[in-house]
Amino acid sequence: MEFIVQVQGDIALVVLGGELDVALAPHLKSVLKGAIEQGHRKIVVDMKDVKFIDSSCLGVLVNAHKLAASLQGAIKFAEASEPVRKIFELTRTDKHLKFCATIDEAKNSFGPR
Image 1 (cartoon, rainbow, N blue to C red):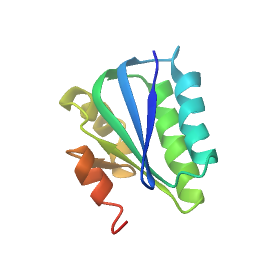
Image 2: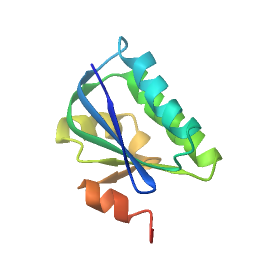
Image 3: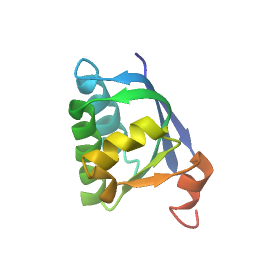
């Protein structure tokens, strides 16, 4: 599984897809940490093609969010399907992460560019 990172102005768009499970967790961690280490402080994660996410990848997303926040950045999550959102709700991680209905909404939530 390839994850795509597209730089759009001052925002890095990370496009995810498929089933995010323990086998993909190291790659997902590398992609998100790499984007943050490259100086991207505004990151939008496009989740529209994610079919499933397990606890290992959920942990990767939470840790990436914490890392970005510690550097005065933020990660916003866009277009997550209802089943995927339900996983975040069941684990109560949705209380700490910002979900947006669309990619544009997520981009605009960072404020003026």
